[in-house]
Amino acid sequence: MREIQRIKTGIDGLDEMLNSGIPKGHIVTLTGPTGGGKTTVALQFTLSCLQQDLSCIYITTSQSPEYLIQMGNMFGWDFEKYMQSNQLEFKFILPVKIASTPTRRDLSYSRHINGIPYTIEVTSDYLARLPAALMESSVDVIVIDSITEFLLLCADEVERRGRVIHIMNIMKEKDSTGFIVKEESKEFSSVELLSDGVIKLERLVLTEKGESVNVMRIVKMRLTDHSKDIREYKITSEGIKIFSKFGII
Ligand SMILES: Nc1ncnc2c1ncn2[C@@H]1O[C@H](COP(=O)(O)OP(=O)(O)O)[C@@H](O)[C@H]1O
Ligand SMILES: [Mg+2]
Image (cartoon, rainbow, N blue to C red; front, top):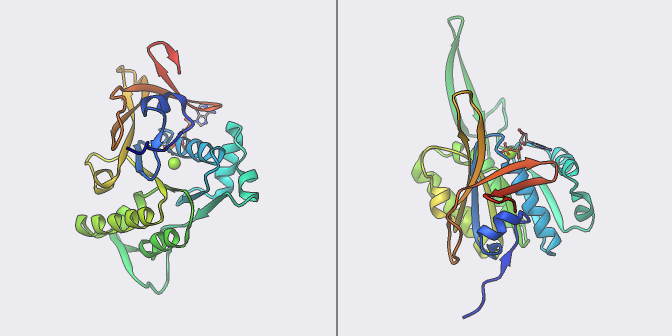
């Protein structure tokens, strides 16, 4: 049997939980609450991939590349070096456009303000631009931060699943490893179902005063044994650190 190649996430405790990393070629989804550290994990993983000589594209849908580079700098991560050598590309794809002559009406909702009705229309060709960007890419690792807007723009669950299968097929055909960030939601969506792996970040409220801890767990990871533990993590000045009963790993 051929040994599975693995990509280290760069987060020591997580790599240990994963039995030394994410299997190469997997599509892994990271879910979690706002401010839970998803972008931090995604950037830390990207840096680790770059350090392992893998080429990466980081598709960002809300924060600009400049912001992400600055965020990296705060953690001591130098992304510009890898951009200069063309090993890394940040691609900013804004999911919505407000057009005066809509090409396609994807979202429309009505509101009343002071009794006056008005309608907001959001138009987007993002559902076509995301797969097009993936099709153009030819890299070892594709990070999408985040997939949430793509899912929101789909009309229903059938369209959502079809489009998710489509973008995952593109990644598989390209032999790329995928890392998809998704805002947490109550239901287990098609993205999690279709991914090879799911890593979940959660905020547990411990006391009535609202004191909370962040925890991480691996919900699934195909083709590998992995820890089923729930581990506490913290966002520190050096990125994400995972704790065990015995302290930082
Ligand atoms: N140096 C730091 N030390 C501690 N916490 C930090 C630091 N930098 C950022 N954070 C925390 O990280 C959070 C944002 O993380 P981010 O990765 O953007 O989350 P998400 O993408 O899940 O919304 C901030 O709300 C802040 O609490
Ligand atoms: Mg984020």
